[in-house]
Image (tube, rainbow, N blue to C red; front, side):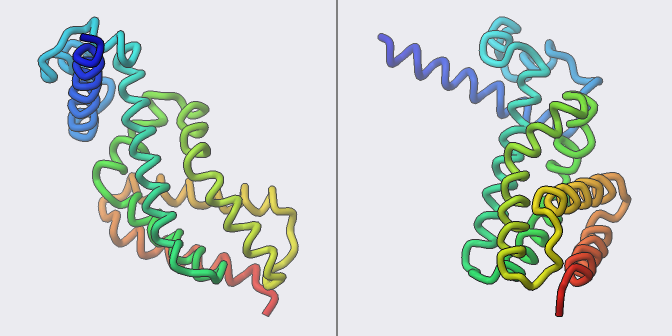
Length: 196
């Protein structure tokens, strides 16, 4: 009997999550009511509050999942190279590609700061992507091929630049062109730190 309850709870949670993922990608967060979310999922408000503590909690779970997927894609993109600079280029390229995709753009970059507030949105982003930036900067510094700035400041500069570029990509009418231009700019920024 317990396993049936567990399966039902998992099914309910997944149905709410899938519905939220779809509707948050299609609509503005503020225009989507909790009632519409549960009606579309064929469930009750009680289920939404039980599993996600409401619409905002469901939205945060969706953002968290999309950020996990982005981090996983970046890790896969850099995994086959040992060279820190090649890994950086691959990681940045993959990150910017993710930022140009409609669902990530709309949910994470455009609606995320509005729905979650800047501080919470940044915490989630840092949780999944901040460590990748820190590791990348440390690996580049370890080569002694770039100017020896403090790692923390350098990571903050890269993270800040990538965050702002991601937001520009999200807000533009031509995200693919913005992504290409952003990738070139990041390469130039890295080259500007080079000692060679």
